[in-house]
Image (cartoon, rainbow, N blue to C red; front, side, top):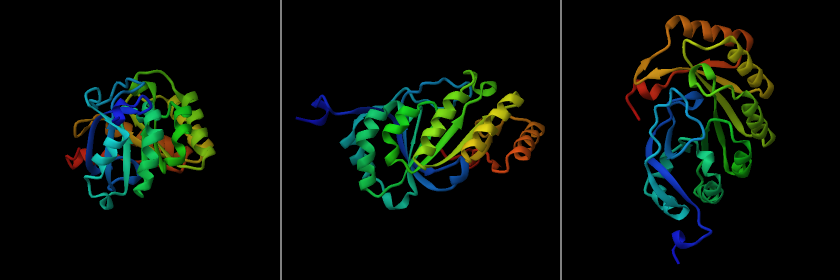
Length: 234
């Protein structure tokens, strides 16, 4: 019986698997193997990712695909999307196999699925969480969900930082709520101006003003753009 024919086998739809550099946050420049999962539980206004089309993989098929790469070259494997935690049942089977390959697991997530995170967190090394703010994402305020997510990550003493994509419409309320959560959980906060292709959409004045407002209230704030776009790297 093949794994796909096994009713207990888990299948995930993967948009793409590729070798590149991390272009966002404090791990910029590290080489990673990216696995982009299809599907998302949010629909952010600025999302520039096409993740609906893809190919289905079983756990064993995806492991064999990964082994085609030079795994010694990678800092870690990045689970990205979409929202990888939508596939937590698949990840519960997949990630223990990844750990057998002595690879670090870097999870990129929108920080709204704490129960899904808890189910796989033992196999995750680094968590890159996005603060989703309504002024740019246009999906409502999600700070209560982010709070529960960060609490789960901290309960397991995991490395975690938060990114915040902002535009010229960022509100003081969103700044204060983001700072409150960053301080509460003592995490690094990365400000990321919204981009359109390789062009920064946010005005210079707004970038400086936003960084000053954050850093004056929370020292552990950094301003980092999407470096891979300036290098024209996927």
